[in-house]
Length: 168
Image (cartoon, rainbow, N blue to C red; front, side, top):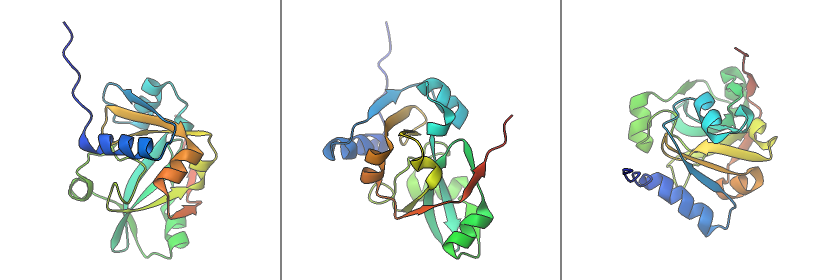
């Protein structure tokens, strides 16, 4: 006999409700925990480029979510220059938990009203026809067309702040 799978977390439910309310085409997958972009791409059956990696960053004295293609790497110097900022760093595990209630790897590519943070996107995400992302948990993914994600997530700015990630 199979154990029933636990219900998706509250934030995952809120994301799915937002997408359904706005009529955005999407597919929700429940899967084994995927702490890395590579794990996520594997269980989704999607190329890593399609993965939307959401980073919570502290830029000077404020926090924001930056979404980039999981095949790319953040160039902090370019981000500082683009935003006219003095400093940029990743949020600590404790700050992430305090701000969002989430663990690293589970942050979805959304800001207000789902997360209390500004949302910016790197152009690398917009070069794909779809985006796949962890939706508030390491066990829940959403795959959807990029234009629909952009309309639902409503990023405040599009930046070019990434470089190619080294191949291993």
